Image 1 (cartoon, one colour):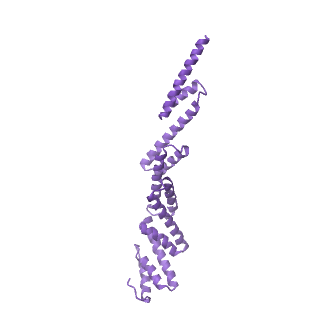
Image 2 (tube, rainbow, N blue to C red):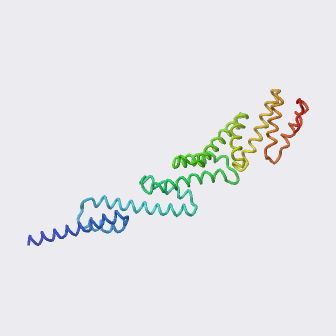
Length: 252
């Protein structure tokens, strides 16, 4: 009787080992559901067998990651960028090594696209430039050598610096920063930058007039008038008023 029991135990152990080896093979080949079937059977038949509990947890986690990744990929393909971004970020928080290279590429694309979307919004939304700058900075964290992301980051920073100077009344500083953006991309923020530049040149010209530097005032008004704004009346009027007092008299 004891011999029969011993033989049964040996057979049971061999059976469990076969189940276990199959489960490991399934798990290593990415067939997590099949692995779970075997691992669950083993855990029922022999509680605490080898590292079965750990492998069950790992397989379930991999299934969750695979499902989340599939959802993220579907959102990405459908243009649901914020939804996709959130899911890729969740995957990174759960397992930083999961599809690491592909997800890094996806994150770059999403951060860059979301930033550009804010910059190119219609109507223009200057108040969203700080958020866009954040997106471009995050894009560069994924692909530090990206020239296009570096350019967008630079333009956003220049605009914010120019905007700050503009609101503080530092007209020449505002002109320097905003002009750097305008020279690179005249249509930045849907023309908002053109209006700010025009106003800054006018205000700078007024400062020069008060300081009796009429040539410089005229030059600032001339630069304002050269911008593609809808109404140049103010700049042209100031030029016309100053011109007779300049030697030689300039030709507008």
